[in-house]
Image (tube, rainbow, N blue to C red; front, side, top):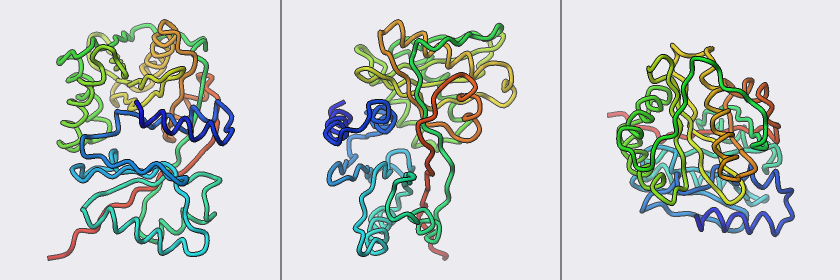
Amino acid sequence: MTKATSRYLLTSALSVPRELEIVLNGPIGPQRVRDDTHIINQNGWYRTITPSAKFSTLNDILFSNLEPTNPDAQIDAIIDEYHQQGLPFTWSVYPWSQPQDLGERLLARGATGITVQAYLAPTSLALDRVDGVEVECVAPASTAGIDAYLEILSAGYQLSPDEETFRRNRYHQLCSEPPSMRLLIARCDGVLAGCLGMVLKTDSAHLTSASVLPQFQARGVFQSLIAASLATLRDMNIPFASGHSNAQSAFWVARFGFKSIYTYTLYELVPTIPKR
């Protein structure tokens, strides 16, 4: 948790409003690092490089601070740093990111982008679970529970075998006592239907990796998972929950009563495979 704390100190020093600070720092945490992860957290940058991970979850640029005089050279150097190691990576571009056309420059280099909504809610937010949906919190280090969670997550996100193995091992570590992460599983009529993770911090938790299987969508599974997460956090005396939502779930998150803090674009750049 020291890596997240170091970012907390940086944003506090810049007098960032607390609710913005919570949401900005939400994705930072031990769930996104491996033993060989190198973290660059200086001069306005926060990015990770994990040579052993050929997936972008552990290779990302959360905050950037490009040189204003020649950003293209720096962009190309950073892309080469990842791609020469065969690493895909993501780059978060915010409304305040510089240069203002950073997104267009990344698209011109072959990036693809998705819109992400960053949100926040007090855990006191009233939200009911839906009848017919059962939600359980995975017991610490429960092999069966973590396997069930990953079965749902892999179906929703098409995880590579390497990423699934990483998550399985990491979740075992983080869910053990004292936990820095909690996993929730939802069932409909006893059948696995959805999942949601919570990364625990000092006075907040980051909701992540939510997935509902297609055959159980529009049955209140997502709402029940969110309601259960808020109740769990209340019981732990954690006052805030943050999250970063894609377009598919952003509508529901707003409907549940979460406050939108900002919208940004997450770009992914995948190394080109040479033709033989």
